[in-house]
Picture 1 (tube, rainbow, N blue to C red):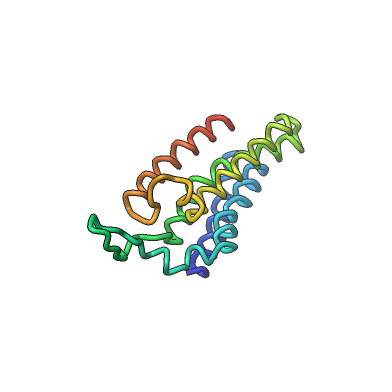
Picture 2: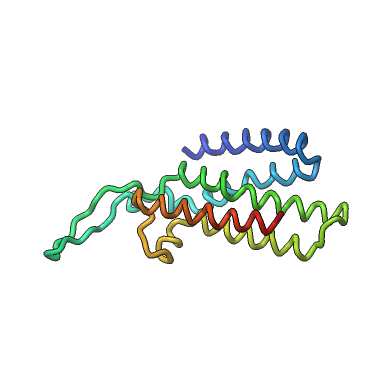
Length: 166
């Protein structure tokens, strides 16, 4: 699984470099090709969260007090890699592009570009940390219903972040 995601990440990097070069110039190409590695590297550093088989089981209690374990979706690595690629690469790439533009072309304030980079980096780390979010959010992320709610919240966060960056 790790080798497959690594190859997908390298291919995505080359594709985003070409698209960025055509659409926004060399700074856009460099920014988006570098940020395409972020979900893979972050998930690789936290590999124990995604490969843990305990995340595939959920303890459920009945009305009479008995407890049993139910098999659930869990923290599936491919799903969270797609979330990282779709939702995290945009704001992180835009903020990296703004940093490069502010350094080399001086067309954007550096302090605002760095602020947006830090903000998008923190949001990206949170979206790729399902175990931490599972403790914060009032619903269970291991179930399909919880993942639907998580996707809805993620879309809202990323739209607000992208609108504020642009």
